[in-house]
Length: 329
Ligand code: SAM
Ligand code: SF4
Picture (cartoon, rainbow, N blue to C red):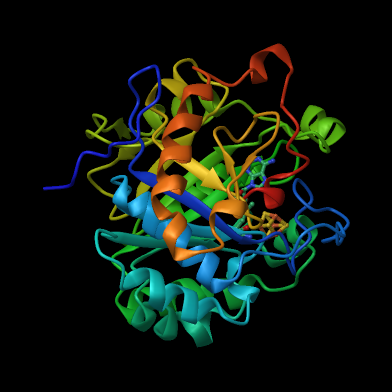
């Protein structure tokens, strides 16, 4: 049985799940995220391995049992595998996952699995090479697809595909994506494009409501699965004729925030209580010595009082997050 986390907010939500960004840097240029590529911000460096382990240990002692490594592109950190091995060996961490753009995945999948990663989310925004290149700035569609297959061969039981829905760019591929999972043991999750501080024009041109996806799925005979206890905000659909599943992450839908079960820490050690908040609370000063562990845990617990009931995206307020690569999407 999974432990009940001690971290809760004032609305009674509990947080078993931490998304930890390992770096802001990225080697792709997704048009909705870093259209001009990664630009150095000149501020603090990324957390080092010792700081990361102190941080994750504190969260795990507070009952967090699932960690997702993200970024930027987490796998471009030269010490990525060392970090994975160290986190995997900590007590209480039951699920170690990561999100990747799939760079060099086919040659690295086995190393990732052997280091202790057990769940992978791979971003694939088009099933057409040319369109994939247009959206990501990288001509790597077949490499990423090979990477997905290599993950299944390597032993990953949880392979998810993240697909951001984009009006005029990949919306015509909706049925292709649905067919894509028919014979594969993967879950493809459509993510509604989120507005961030830097992508207002793009958002206005390309945002597509997740409701269109659920309507299409229902019309094709897919059924929404009942939400499991402790599940996050994705709604999962299944079809008797499809091996793969489809998920929908629709942050603009009603009640999206009521099932929030995750916290985020940026690559520089700031706790973000919401993806769309006004900024983070730095924990870095409490990551400098092993004897600060209790103080760090107390600080995390007390910061939970500031977590709000919901984001304010509907009022057009996307918070201070410039793009999702900055705090780990
Ligand atoms: N670089 C890795 C990747 O792309 O998978 C991990 C970081 S990326 C920020 C995590 C996820 O956020 C990706 O699936 C990406 O497509 C998604 N994402 C980034 N910006 C987004 C936005 N504005 N709206 C919705 N999803 C977004
Ligand atoms: Fe990089 Fe991921 Fe952002 Fe694409 S979505 S630019 S791969 S961080």
